[in-house]
Every structure is written in C-alpha cells, then in structure tokens.
Image (cartoon, one colour):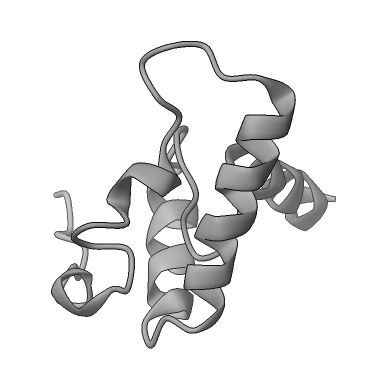
Length: 86
C-alpha cells in the first residue's frame, strides 16, 4: 500500500508563482556564475518561507532529484541523505 504524502503546504509556499523559475535550472545551459546567483536568490526565498521545513521533508522523503526544495539544492540533499545513512 502506498501512502499519499501531505502536500497541503504547497499552495502557501513562497516559491509558487512568479519566482518558481528560480528553483529549477533553465532548459538552456547556464554558466556557473548564473547558476550560483539563481540558487542564492531561490535560497533567500526559502529562508523566509513559512513552509520551508515541510518542503524539505517532502523532497527528502520522495528523493526529489531536481531543483531547490526547502533551501537545499540537489547535491545538498544527496549529501544529507548520505550523512544520515552513516
């Protein structure tokens, strides 16, 4: 049996709407500096988000492979999972 995950927090997340493009890489190649700026802007939105903890918990639970969730990038979430496993 598969349990449905709670996503009731998503409509009030600060990333929804006009800022959503900051949380995922563009379809075209971006330079390292551009990526760093985009990620910093996204993380600054995450810091003031009222549901950041729920967002990160969701991403960690489903092992979301893309984007910034709860203030962490893909690689940062992988590092946390690896660290938790040791």
